[in-house]
Image 1: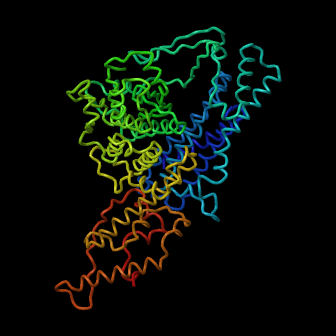
Image 2: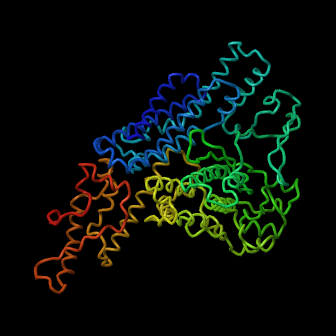
Length: 612
């Protein structure tokens, strides 16, 4: 109850803040975020009203405390973002940052859509069958339309603001007038052209011949970036200010005892952020080539007290220039051997042709490097740091298939994905789009089942990589699709959920058909028992009662035939199979079944009178 009350407070705070929405440069994006958070809160309230009782808040409500706690974090992060957008200081700096920034949709709304199904165990909010009320679904058609248009709307809004400032004569300084001219020029450019232009350094630093050097690292990789005037035709990137790189952070918090740096939910969240960054780069046909923890920049989230971090991928596009300008040394940044992050095929190419332009950097080589980063996130250890081999011998072993060893207590459902990423055959490695879907669903699973975050946790009933493989077979268009809108996230979550139930149901049916005494007598029970808060629309998609009763009657008859042959059984009577606990663990979703009067009958086994 406390978490739900705090979510309501955040929604109220957002409504109060939006009274001053005219001060926000990315006003349309922020309004969309607030509307979606408000819609999410209303949907939660409606589901709780229909399925929970207030007098049971100190007992049966406890199973939803952890999901609501995680959802509260998403709401608070959205509130912090709105407050930052309302700040009135450095108007021009904010304009430069926001005119190309899409964090509102790609981070905050993404997290809402990825977490929101958790609040009631349903993912149908992304699917709106024809004729259903839109209020039942978080991603209505209106929200989908706004998701596709808010970024362009805000660019037009910023363009109008700058024109108004210029025409009103309030631009008194030469610098402000130059910034206005530059932003007007780029905001008027087409989207295609905008991908190829950068702001001139002379405007950003307010001097034609200003030069500044900023140290970015140590060792031989890259020491500095030099900003020069535009006549020298040198480009630069102005990136978000971050605190440090991931490698230094892990080294600092792990200490000499090499303790595990992150809880499992935090590690999975970081893995997802890195994978999403790489998914975006690959959608632009940009391959990193130097993906390692030193090129992952991080900073703490403002409101997080549980170790959650904001991560950004950096260093992409520098591999060829670094190789040609600086000689390699045996160790890279932080004293690590650089080749431990390279895929075997890259090491083979480097041995054959030498380091440089001929290195075989591909999408799959980046996936291999990502797998090594995951190993360090999960263990706190640099890959291969425990091995006695060094230099060329280690490189040969990597090409031969040697990989780091996970501790015995590592969660198998995460380590299995990591091992797929560093598979010796590049064709067997998943794409970053697949990795993102798997990790997104893993986050959902951990929030619904926090006990799986503990060491030595058992495997989930279904391997999430198998769900991804099934999705790629069922929906071939997903394989070759470009970077999808975040509005597609609920649909992908829904497909995963359907396939998870199908696999669980198939496994249950196989156990029953093989004569397992512990198998349930109800073949369709799992589908119903796992949907405690399913909407009437979803229930209509399940098999009709007549079909279910017919199947159950046949199952009962087959049991009677088997049991009638047992010695000591009177003729004409059937022996009901002994009641055993379900082979599948009841998670927090199915435990909610007993709270809803409408769904109470579907929980558990049907009685003999209901079967006849």
